Amino acid sequence: MLVTLMSKTHEMARKGSSADEIVSHIQSEHCLNKKAAKDIASVYLELFNDENKKSWKKAKELGFEEFCKSEWTIEWDGRCDWHTKHGGSYPCSAEASLTFAVGDKKKLHDHLGSELKKNPFLSEDDIYGILLEQIEEDLDSDMREYCDADDYYEPFWEEFVGEGTYESEAKWKSWGLEIVEFTGSGDIDFEP
Image (cartoon, rainbow, N blue to C red; front, side):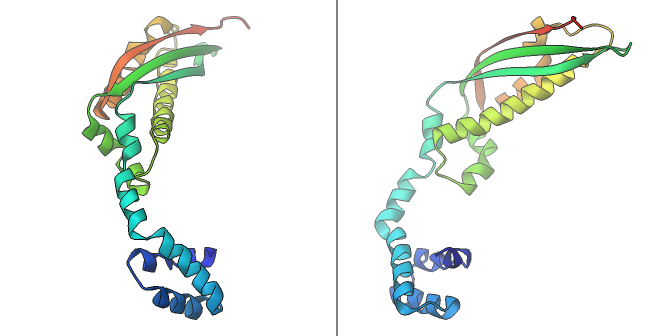
């Protein structure tokens, strides 16, 4: 079965080839006996029957549509070191809570275009996972940048959310997200 999948034999069933054509192809291309070839062909023909194709068409991007109906919350924790100009290094921590909804479905669809093209059957949780990873990467990057913005004055963590995340927030809005609530705080440890 794996060998026939790798050689894209299933595409014959998807494109409407007959059982005899698929069996003949499997026998000639993969040197299988007729019974094994018929068994494999029947799996593909059952999978790509008209009823299944209609069901798939209805289910296409259903997860995306469901995702757009809800608000989502991301809880984030970050760590980095503030490096002073005198060679000191102090651990910093920050946390944030971001609640967002979809403000512009078209923009979000465009942002997720490659993922939806690869798999139009992504669930709403799959989409949340993709955005979670991207937003967490942005927050990690924002924190490192904010932490090392000045080597003389310590980071003012009360302003990290907003001042330190300004560009990321603009990026998320360009994806079609609407920020409902975004709060956070942080701390720096001066103890050796």
